[in-house]
Length: 80
Image 1 (cartoon, helix red, strand yellow):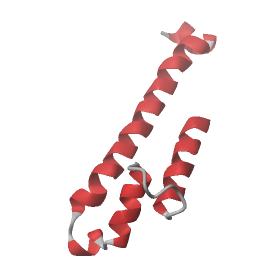
Image 2 (tube, helix red, strand yellow):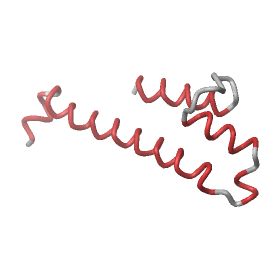
Image 3 (cartoon, rainbow, N blue to C red):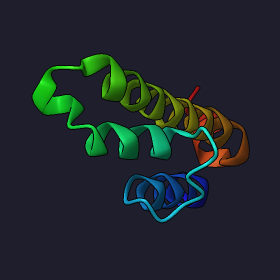
């Protein structure tokens, strides 16, 4: 949970323009798409792929957590 919160905090701050703007990151991509009004112009490829990548990162972290929980939690390993 902490890793996900840290990633979300960094992406959120960068999307607000509070990160290093010279680096290519997911948050900066979302920031520049907001600045260029990509949603209003219909440029979904500016903001769509970063959001999909963020969702895939969190899905991967969740599935990893569930998988590790079956090994670390003895009560869950007895059920299987």
